[in-house]
Amino acid sequence: MVNNKIAEAEENLLHVYNRFPIILDHGEDVYLYDAEGKKYLDFAAGIAVCGLGYSNKELKDALKKQIDLLCHTSNLYFHESCGEAAKKLNEISGMDRVFFTNSGTEAIEGALKSARKYAYTKESGRYEIIAMQNSFHGRSIGAVSVTGTEHYRTPFEPLLPGVKFAEYNNLESVKALVNDKTCAIILEPLQGEGGIYPATKEFMEGIRELCSKNDILMICDEIQCGMARTGYMFAWQEYNIKPDIMTMAKAIGNGIPVGAFAMTEEVAKYSMEAGDHGSTYGGNPLACTAVKTVIDIFQKEQIVDHVKEMGEYLSICLEKLVQKYDFVKECRGKGLIQGIELTKPAGDIITKAHEAGLLIITAKGNTIRFVPPLIITKEQIDEMIEKLEIAFAK
Ligand SMILES: *Cc1c(COP(=O)(O)O)cnc(C)c1O
Image (tube, rainbow, N blue to C red; front, side, top):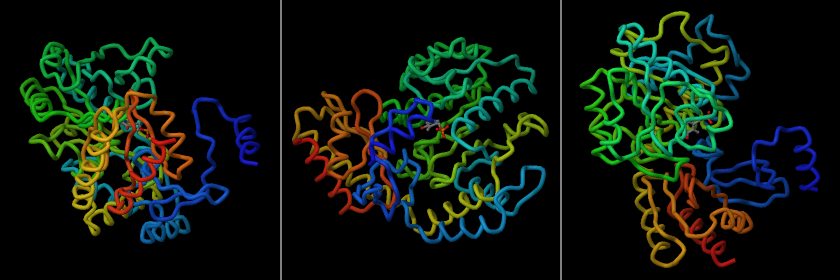
């Protein structure tokens, strides 16, 4: 039955995803249920999206109400939710001006355009972008151009000119690429897809200094590591820095497709003006209702503090796995974005975990990535470890 339905779907879809043979049907708290009623503990959260899990009544009620009122207006008009979502997002991000997009990739596009426009207005002649090896920023031509992983890039070349790649966490390698044409440096404060690698303090602060000295814009991609994931509302807030531009998506809508890029007033002054950028759907009433309600709930329920506490517990549990199993090489990460690197194929473990009723995902290089809903409890972390050990033993 399931196989028939999957075969039918595959007949009409473009084959770009290696989907697992699971048809998910509904969610409850931090659990997902497939079409046959099998229950899964969810440590994937739709790739770090569903921070509040699947049963938040306040969010569901707000979205249902908005659907009944109005889903879309276009950006030719105002809607109350748009200003409210922007205000709240700026409050938690420390930025001054925000633009809503429909995805993370579009937020990256907007951030790159904003940086180029800043240099254009200032007539600085700067256009080069320094990005990081092993990074991931999305799938459009612009986003792929700053993504430092060959297999995402090669089939689509030639990509944007003027992009150079430095080694992540190697400040000297960044300095070596800076010249009087450098417009912006883009990085993830914690590389997610690339295998769960947090930036060092020296690296983040060194890049900030380098940027400030040379009027280069520092762009932080917070799409995966933002919204409390690392135990800070945004990952850069752990460091003694502030970016000039940042990108957000994934958890800001808890599953309603929405992203954003934001900048300081100092950048906005010289950057995008009326007519420079736009989006038909971007920041529509449904998306903005999601964003403002999600932020409200994060604040009320003190999600950041909860993530810090659960993250420490998860680290302890993962460290034990490193001690216990020869093939678990190391654990990395922060808060509720952590990973374990295996010396054998991670993909096999994922399939066995599914059988055991646990949804986990991989990141690059035989890394298992743990990005559960942020509301996860200690008991559920224990349950995850139990199921993972069943998968290990299979
Ligand atoms: C997921 C991701 C993106 C792309 O976001 P989409 O919503 O898939 O377009 C960009 N940057 C990072 C760090 C991501 O994790």
